[in-house]
Image 1 (tube, rainbow, N blue to C red):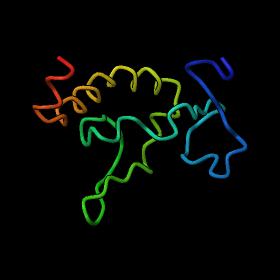
Image 2: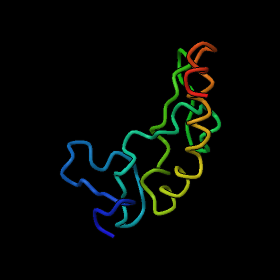
Image 3: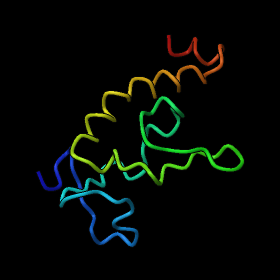
Length: 95
């Protein structure tokens, strides 16, 4: 599965490994998790730090074997969140 549409490993990245994941499998496909905007709805292991900032450094879900499917299953919620941010005038352009 090396460098497929579901898996990519960049072990030459200056931050690799950015999270502690057991075993050899480490997926960099979602290095910047698209579920970040879902807040508590992302299903990951995160905390809110000072100033209400979401800190995902304790979450390894995107880098695990199950992570790709977890993210794909939640992408519709990201899409719905984006739609809800469009004001009523802009929304009519897309309907």
